[in-house]
Image (cartoon, rainbow, N blue to C red; front, side, top):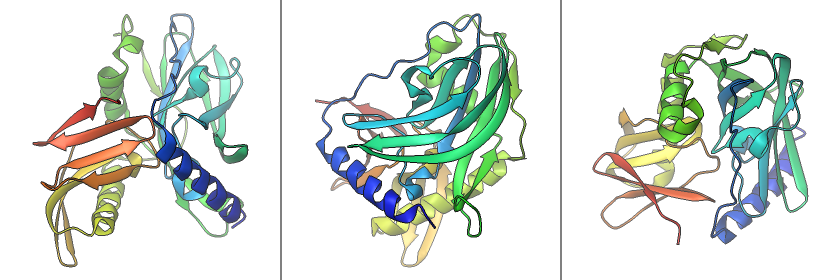
Length: 269
């Protein structure tokens, strides 16, 4: 696949930047969208292709959009969450991109949608799965996770929904997999993270596609016991555990930990 060498170089640069970041760069959220449409979704699985889905010191990540206005505020990508406003009319989510130290990587998506004033247009969770025999080397799977997306917006960006309680929510055109299939994907992600942890017993893991799961490992057996709602869709994600087994998971600009089955954000020093 043509992406491998470039993806490896960019991934290395992102990891170096990951270790160097001490403070987050402010990302500008969309402000008023009374006369525009709000477009939301998630991007996941891009780290396998060298594209991080977060911004930070020395890291630029975002989505490219054609039609309906200029470049999205904050590059349209926050914690791996696609979020931008558009003027009324047809538009296309062209792709996702990341840039670190002068190295750039772009992943085409080509999702068409119609933006309407006062409407929330959902793109679903778009997962990049490796696929041999395709031009880009991947297939984009779309999952219909409308309820989860609205819940995430209410918890994470409540200011965006203020005054829009009655906004119409529309799923953009596309072939969607149901939420049950997203649970299957997260189960596979959780098991993979658990095996990489090289730990035994019961503990929490975080990973791609908003995965946050409690697992139980005994030898080669890995069980996924339960999930928590996503608090981030960042990629890449680093997991670590203290002596008591408490999970801390981190992206360049933020850290969280799971204590007694609840997530706490760790303030940056």
